[in-house]
Image (cartoon, rainbow, N blue to C red; front, side, top):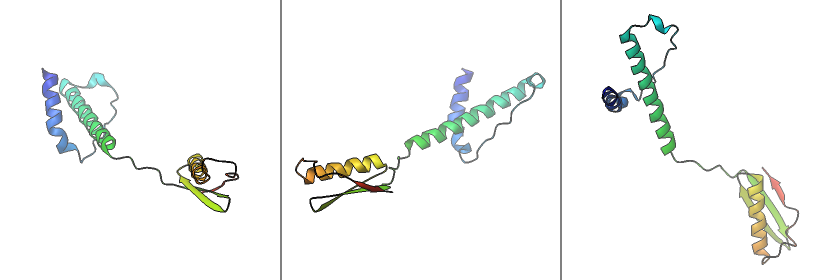
Length: 118
């Protein structure tokens, strides 16, 4: 029952502490702590865990940004130029090969010697 009240209190009070980052101090000797000191330390740990959970939920809810296209590959085949871009050399190379293949009506004979640069 106490755990339920603590959980409810943590959920209700956690927005009030969301802006202030709570730092936990490492204890040295727990034999010298009184019951109220240990209860305070448990509350501090629960508060810190609540802040960590809120931060994790916030990070998971944020949209993931796609990596920018850094690689550019090009092929000159039968007088036509084909290009492909991607976040990695392999993806850019694959895109330019697919574009060249489509431009050559499925024939990859002339789609040779791609040039790639970052």
